[in-house]
Length: 160
Image (cartoon, rainbow, N blue to C red; front, side):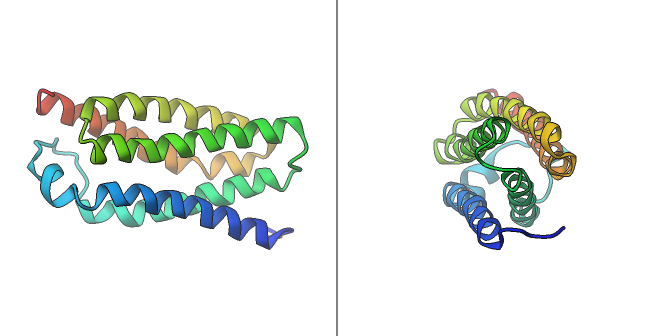
């Protein structure tokens, strides 16, 4: 991949990682206390795995968004794709606020379903512009699918 606009790539990486960092501010304090006290399904990944996975996923999201941006921000389809990307990024942040910050498993479930839909739309939009950008988001939707199943299972197991 030839990087035409390195400053734009760096800016997008910083933006996405900062969103992840801000979301983690709601997460870290709840993991050893509230989250640890919840009943969780057997397929729950170990807590230490979430941080590294999210750093990688935010990086992949960043590169994916950059590949779309590189196609020309003035193009209508590029703008639309990046607006959808921004919406899913906002929902990603809001899930951390709802689930860990507000400790609302049910609101978290509603938001993560909306997040999954937004990611799917983003993937479709990105594939239409540049296939490689859509492919980079596939691990993200896979992880969010697991997280959504986990969120639902925690809701059921804790009768909330």
